[in-house]
Image (cartoon, rainbow, N blue to C red; front, side):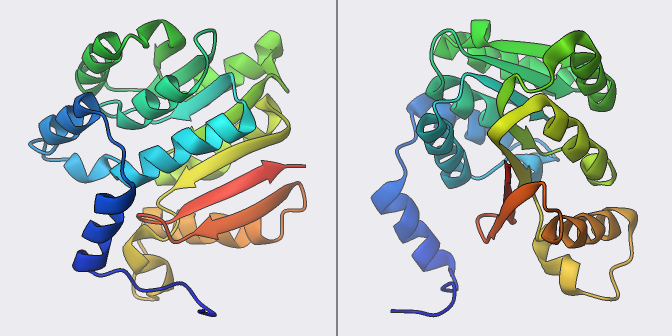
Amino acid sequence: MSNRTIQVDDGLYQYILDVSLRELPLQKELREETASDPMANMQISPEQGQFMAMLVKLMGARNCIEVGVFTGYSSLAVAMAIPDDGRIVACDVSEEWTKTARRYWQRAGVEHKIDLHIAAAEQTLTNLVSGGGSGNYDFAFIDADKTGYARYVELCHDLLRSGGIIAIDNTLWGGSVIDESAQDDDTRAIRLLNEALHNDERFDISLLPLADGLTLLRKR
């Protein structure tokens, strides 16, 4: 019994992976390739990918959005979890990183499920709204520039159906959200978003201490 979340040290974290992670060799290979990138810390953890895959399965999600692709681990996990006729609108600005993502999507046989847009995510999402996409999506994952998070949430709110879920990454931001000396733009943006979402009656909310903090919003 416990009345608060347990602290996870390295040993306990490894135990969690040992007894619960069901990562395919292809996913592990993608993680290992990405580990050599100077920005490797932008990749989600494997247990987070597995959690999101289970979440979209539980929802029966078919139409998804990803804001921030990087080398494609999160989109790969979700694409493998949705039906063959499911689709992900994936937003990123990097041709280089998403080149790696495309290779792994193709090898996994899920490339046909992913519609990659190399453009500013706000513009891509705005185009979806203006094109009649409001209410047509089941799930959205936001993991991109932190100062853009609030705008992405608004656009994804419009695009999701009632009962749809938005998952927002890095909402604990390495603990900086409670460090008053941290006043950089990214930290402040996450703080302000967390505070705003706490009182946003359009959503049900849960901030999970998973990886670097994962906030789940269910559109009412």
